[in-house]
Image 1 (cartoon, rainbow, N blue to C red):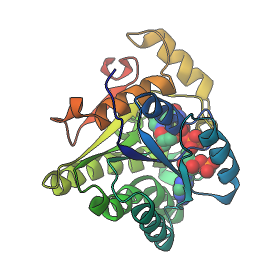
Image 2: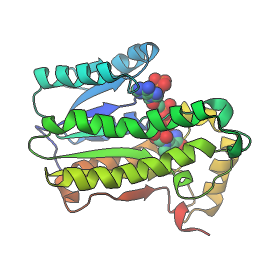
Image 3: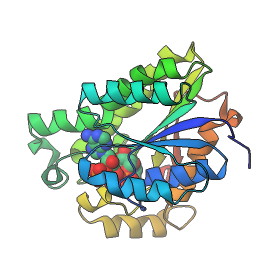
Image 4: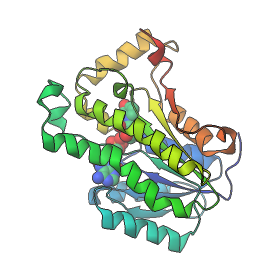
Length: 256
Ligand code: 0WD
């Protein structure tokens, strides 16, 4: 593997040890990178601090950044600027939709639920990119997490699918704007992984079974696989890639 020694990355969205963001953190840590963690809700702080504490080396900075709150975003990045100065990338692993709208018919989505899902799951990427771009003075890489439901209709994924379509377009527009500063922006379309968020998706077991049966690799995706692809996107090995959506899903997306 290649080294990311001397580089600093912000990991947003670790909820617990199953989180995709934690898979990204472990992979980046393995490549020698320095990490900063952010969490949204007060109740997540302890779990993030505990996990961050298990990583060898100097302790990571852990900060609150509820992405629905502009003041928190500003304060969080101001603190990072003060403490570290320069960063090289951000893993944005954040999404949210009301649980009762991840079931039943998409047509019943409320205005409030629609806006909430877009606010946390897509606009937050734009807001974070804006807050972070001056900290990536040597260029950088932003990686976010999407899902196939943003490209195709997946029953029950509903409003989150529409928010992921927005997120993927968001990636392209940000990639265009930030390319001139040497900042790349990409998404990973991850196969389904059993995390806290996945609990909200109804009938998750049968989705996993379908992947094992139908995906070319005949197995489900792991947070480690997603983490390693993110590390590639954070490294110079991917320097020619921006505005892209890379599927890390055992190849499931190619199946008809
Ligand atoms: O199958 C899956 N799990 C897939 C997930 C397949 C494909 C994509 N993804 C995406 C998700 O949509 C999301 O964008 O990957 C990303 C990470 O998802 P995850 O690892 O499945 O999620 P989880 O471990 O539940 O963490 C999501 C976190 C929240 O945890 P808490 O417990 O604090 O709600 O998203 C964060 C939060 O850390 N989050 C927020 N962070 C800041 N501000 C906010 C917020 N307002 N809301 C949620």
